[in-house]
Amino acid sequence: MQTLQEQLNVIKEKVQKCTNCSLCKNRTKIVFSDGCETAPIMFIGEAPGKNEDETGIPFIGRAGQLLRKYMFECGFEANDFYIANTVKCRPPENRKPTKEEKSACFDFLNSQIELINPKYIILVGATALESFILDRKLSITKARGQIFEIGNRKFIPIFHPSYLLRYFNEYEGSPRDLFRKDLLMIKSLIKEV
Ligand code: SF4
Image 1 (cartoon, rainbow, N blue to C red):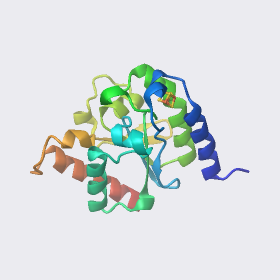
Image 2 (cartoon, rainbow, N blue to C red):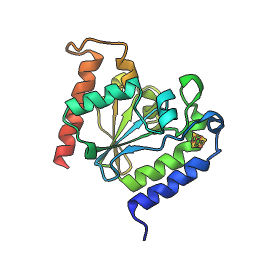
Image 3 (cartoon, protein in one colour):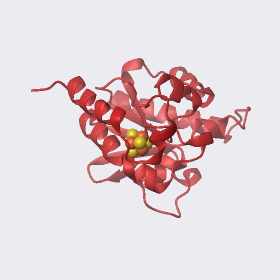
Image 4 (cartoon, protein in one colour):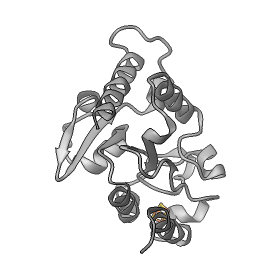
């Protein structure tokens, strides 16, 4: 029987050869995942950017570094989380992935979710939110910090850290303050797991 790592590697090898959508044309590297395969939470972001495309590691550009900074300030440890994106290849000029591109890539993401089997899935930003919670009226501003139970999964949307790059202050109720509060809430939930 294959180990969890071997099963994930099988999916990763398929992603490396994937031409299911046009994003394969310009990719330098696929961006499969980072973090711990047995983590209780899985972060799902939007799409790789320039730094991610060059290195193959999700959330390492400016926005990703900000997310990681807040996570570690909120007490997250390396084995608390696994990170992936709605698509594995970089959209040109950092545009949002289209519905069709997300759909073409969804089976890979879903296979990762099934194997990691996280207690909570953290939807990082509106694009990830829209991929899993199909309520068009639900904005990330309204949804953030809430727990949504769909099927046998629990989802918690949070702001995308690129949104926080526009706001430097952290006064009560500011995007950065709310982001920190959401991460602290998530950290407290995984302590209970
Ligand atoms: Fe394949 Fe996903 Fe890359 Fe599109 S984004 S080419 S579906 S791996």
